[in-house]
Length: 332
Length: 288
Image 1: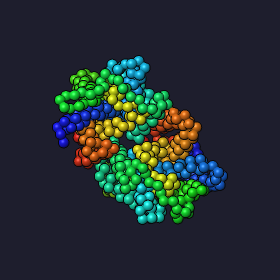
Image 2: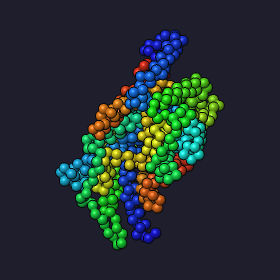
Image 3: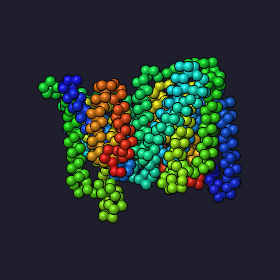
Image 4: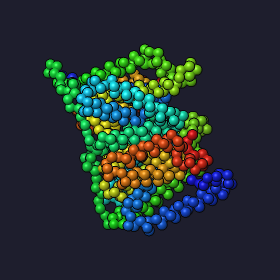
């Protein structure tokens, strides 16, 4: 996400420019809630945007870097949300610990899925992830112990950081969501620059060649899956604490799985800035279109949405970030 | 379990299975020719169901009569979608292709709601309505006719693909694109043809379905996920595989819907897919 022509400048200067822009953006985002206290719509919009950006990063790690396209990542979101919520209801577990537990459960499920399904190629893998997520949806919608289709209400606590609940002033959610994106992005960028990132991209481009270099593609893909699933699960816990109610349509739906992938693809797959740009564009459009048009109940927001997705896939298959003319820019 | 009940379940399962198969064959044909999964396939079905319903409620045309017209119009629609959208992403990545047709799906679904509203519509007095009594067995005749119709359409499609020159060209492009090009086959035309035929398949399936199933903007989602599973289960690109898998799924979901719970009827179908691809990563009849 640098200015046009930055690639002509010496790389060191480009790094400085980029670093400066990121610092500026962060400063603006940190200061913004001071002006948004009385604007719940914008506050919610940005919080949701951060949440999707963090999930897009997590999805990107598996799909963009390791080349394993999942259209079932919503299941990890649901696993996180249900694990921490059930633990809070059942044994009164603190949601932070519940979130970590959810991440561990999701990572384990991810590893099992990976062990079984990573040998499936292309669309067979895509359909397998879709089918797994949909099975979980059906099972949870029918399972009385987890509230079935009625869903679960979270136990209400005194608002505090420790309790992960804030009632009157929602700004802490904003900061926590911002922290989630920053953490997810930092992790992806860090991995990208280490051996892990290179090996993952090598697997995506040519799995056999990577194997012949002595790297186990399965091992690296499993690590990517575990990290990706764990990150998304923690976002699920965040969502549960934010909305204080979960049910299968809100945390396990196919639409959610697709939206997670869409954020990364529309922004720019395989790039660290892609999911952030994708979430900024898609969440803004969908939330504003909803309040402008949906009074009519005619779904103009979704029509617009569909058109944008088609336009990006035709004109910018490498995502919106490729507009900025950055080197590389996604999967070719 | 009585023999009557068993027959009823089997016939009902076969009927739905033939419809799933017809939808899945349209998908797998497109995939076989150009390696693209049409994620808007369910919305093609939805459009053809609305078309049939419109013909019925505005001009009193019975679904049986409307069927050929709906099939033909959907053929044109498929060709249009190919030239306007799909052709632009032919050389793109799998992601670009998935999301091009996914965007189309979102758009068509929202457009349907924009034009027709979210209400459920039904064709209540089709020629095919009512029930059929054979011995002690009661069968809904619309479902039976739809199953038969889907079977006939599938056979016709088989004849087209495996017995005609055009079908041979289609299969040639599907098996080896480069070799087909050197033989002077116009691959672009074959792509368009595959989209036309694929859309016509769901057109026929939609017209048949609308005589006993509600029409609403999200109706495609009900059928399409199952059709993807049928395509993958049978093996991407395999027409025989889609037919076998479609029928298998139809029977399985009726049985599990009856014995377990109607809300869980697709769960065994999904599990079947996972078990099959874990044993055979390219489905029942897919190319290794």
